[in-house]
Image 1 (cartoon, rainbow, N blue to C red):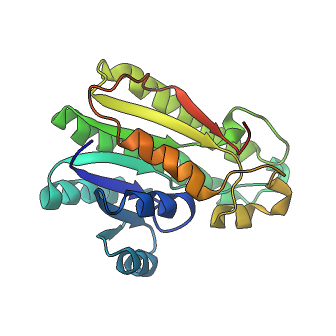
Image 2: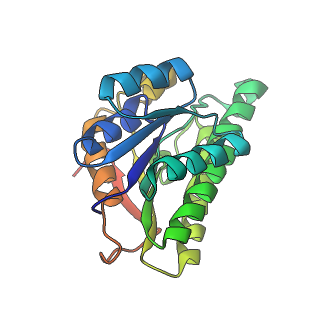
Length: 231
């Protein structure tokens, strides 16, 4: 896709930061994070615009996308990389941790996709890539809440993709396995498989999907990659 601004939600660390770095130089990028100081630091490092946004607030998400459109015009694509870890047996999980995971991984995802598609549908072109988790397709002990919240996003993408009735607006999902990122540090070493992909490797696939043209043949809504480093 030649032109347009690309919004990377969760673009201040991990996979999101790798996606932003890979896009820069070819496209305008806006990095989005929830901590203003971190957004400012990353935007300064990458020499690109940044926006602080709590995606659990619909008003903030709406203002984020409206501001990008007002300032830069067409949105080329949106990478939704923001996520909150919630590992541990359900009986041991703090209720606050459960609530936060639901707010970010469920409500935040809903708000981001709602506003992204509002603008892309109006433009009649553009791509959304939702970064899920391999946990959606492979059950494992110790992550019932995390898996459930990420499964919500996968289900939402499938339904939204079907509703587009057009290949011009593509809604896609990608499911990485555990990677050496800040989220993985919070998860703990026991959840990092012996074989895994690096964020930069997965970012290459996210960017490829973001840059698909309106007339490129692609099955919107499909799980496009099991990005866990295996072959």
